[in-house]
Image (cartoon, rainbow over the protein chains, first blue to last red):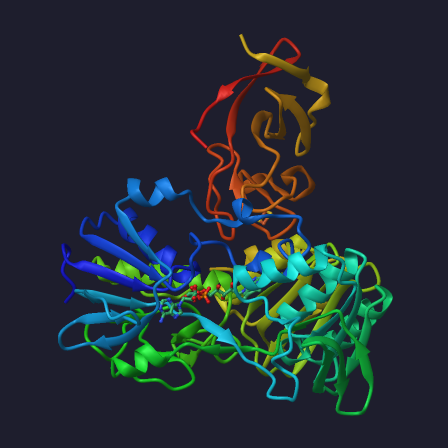
Length: 422
Length: 107
Ligand SMILES: Cc1cc2nc3c(=O)[nH]c(=O)nc-3n(C[C@H](O)[C@H](O)[C@H](O)COP(=O)(O)OP(=O)(O)OC[C@H]3O[C@@H](n4cnc5c(N)ncnc54)[C@H](O)[C@@H]3O)c2cc1C
Ligand code: FES
C-alpha cells in the first residue's frame, strides 16, 4: 500500500491534479508532492476558456487557481512546461520528453484530454483554433480583439455552444455548425435540443445542423471560409473547432493500466497497476449513477468530462492514498453558461422513457426531469434553483417519484424531495 | 461600536437585504428573528448571493449562478463549484438600529 511518507507525483496540474494535491495536504499527508504539467502556466480554471477568456472580460489573474506562493507554502512542487513521455511502473519512474527521470512512490495520472480535430482539407490553415488550453483561448481572444468579426464554431456540444453564445453576445457574427439535429442534443436529448435550436436563432446565431464542415479554404495561409458537406459556404475570419476531446491515456497504457474508453479504475481511483491512480477526464470509474437512476448497489463504469467530477476524483484519490476507505460516490453534475443563463444538470441519464417539464421555456426558466422506470435519472434546470436542489436530492436518494407532484406546476418540489428522503 | 447599516424594520423575516460595509456589499438575512451577514459577491465567479435563494431552515444562501450554497454563520461553501468561503459578519440590533460589528471568519 501507499506509504504515508512517500513521494506522490501527479501528471497534469489541472482540475483533477490540483484537487488531489490540495486534498493530500488537507488530509495531513506530509510526504513530497510533485505536480508536473506540460502547460507553462500556473494551474488555472478551465471552464472560463470557452466564455470570459475568449471575450476578453477576464484575464489569467482571474482564472488561476492559486498564487505561486500557495504552492511553496504548502510544499507542493510544481514542474511546469514539462511533458511526461514515459513511465516505468517497475522501477517506479516517469521520464520527461527531455529525458529527465523522476521517481515516485505513488503516481496519479490526471492528463485530461486533447482536442479531437476534423480530418478535412485545409485544417492546418491559420485562424483555426480550439479552446481547450489557456494558450489556445488567448490566441482566439487576441485575434477577435484585433478585429476578427465572422466566427465559425464547428461543433455544438457544450463547449462549442458556450463559445458561440459568448461571442454572439459580444457582437460577433457567429455561425454554429452541429452535426446532430440540434446543439447539445447528444447529451440532453432532442426535445431540449429543439429549445436550443430556437434560442440560438433568437440570439442571431446562424445555426446549421445535421451537417458538418467538409473543407476549410483560405488565402495567404489563413482561413477565409469553410464549406459544409451540403455545399454551404460560411465566411470566417476565425474558426473555433469544438468537436470533442480525446482522453490522453497513452501514459496509462504505457504503464500497463487497463484502458477501455478511459483508464479503468475502482471506486478509490486505483488502476490495476500498483500505486498508479487515474482521475478526472481520463478515468472510467464505477458509479451508482452510471445507468440512469441510482438503483441499489448496482454500479456501471462511466467516464465523465466535467469539472465537479474531476475535483471529486482528485479528493477521492488523495483520501485513498491517506488510507481512507471512503470511495468516490458523488452525484455527477455540471453547469453551462449561455446567453446569461446557467443550465445546471445533475445525474447521468443516457436513456430515459419520459420527460417532465416545469416552468416557462420561453422565459428560459424551466426544468426538465428525465425519468426511467419511474425514477429520476437526470435533471436539467435553468433559472429554477429550487428545482435543481430538489433534483439533486431525489437523484441521490434514488426513491421512486410521484409523477403527479413532479408534473404539478404549483407543487413545492423541494419540500416533496425532503419529505420522501430517508 | 458597530457600523450602522439600517433600521430593524428594513430587515423582514425570511428576506435578504444588501447593505454597504467598509466598501463592500454585504447581504443580511433575517432567520427566526436573528440577523446574519455574508459578503454579497460569490467566491466562485461573479454573481450576487442576494439574488439567489435563501434556505432559512438550513441557514444557507444559494448563489443564483452555479448553485453553491454558503452557510450564513461561517460563510463556508457547502457544495462546489465555490471552494473558498465568503466573508461572514456579526450583525446586531441595538434599539432599532442594525449594525455590523465585525467580520467573523478569515475569508
Ligand atoms: C473550454 C472548456 C470549458 C468547460 N466548461 C465546463 C463547464 O462549464 N462546466 C463543467 O462542469 N465542466 C466544464 N468543462 C470540463 C472540465 O473543465 C474538465 O472536466 C476538467 O478540466 C477535467 O480536468 P482534468 O484535470 O481531468 O483534465 P484537464 O483539465 O484536461 O487537465 C489535464 C492537464 O494535463 C496536462 N497533460 C496531459 N498530458 C500530459 C503529459 N504527458 N505530461 C504533462 N502534462 C500533461 C494537460 O496539458 C493539462 O494541463 C470545460 C472544459 C473545457 C475544455
Ligand atoms: S458564481 Fe457563484 S457558484 Fe459560480
